[in-house]
Length: 83
Image (cartoon, rainbow, N blue to C red; front, top):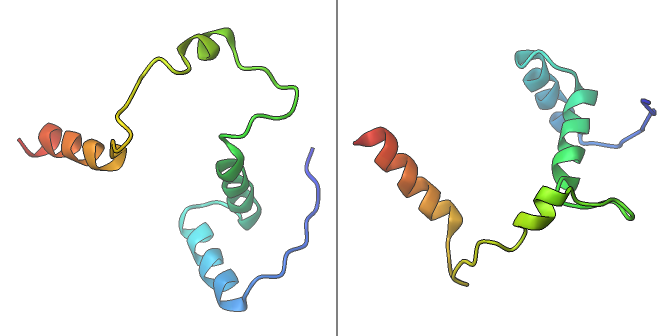
């Protein structure tokens, strides 16, 4: 169910975001909703349960404390596409 929301945002930000939305054939409302979903994607609602598979897999990988995921992924992509 959609609910109306009023926001106060800088005029220049609104103008540039409207251009972005038009170029990507979407609406401001859709962009805001997608962003809110992105922000809260890793949060589990109170009372919400993880699926049995996710619960089973949680904590399976034990990474070093200083492991840099972004750097390692960049290296992986370079090896995959540049060699």
